[in-house]
Image (cartoon, rainbow, N blue to C red; front, side):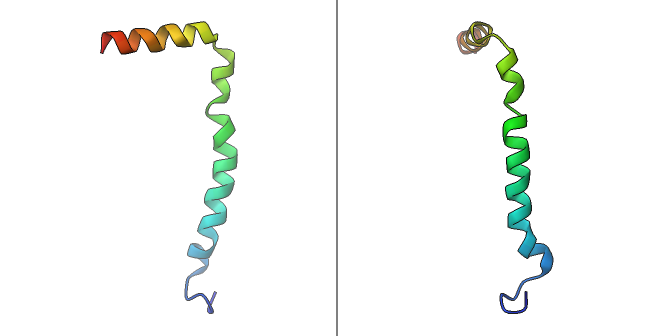
Length: 51
């Protein structure tokens, strides 16, 4: 860490955010696979029309 002039926290921040992205990336849109795609398009189109 001394050669890069940063603390251990800053040095591990990139790896930590990468791992969190790998975990949360698939976990957030996964429930959408259970929703019928026609229901999703109905909701999306009605939201666009009403707003």
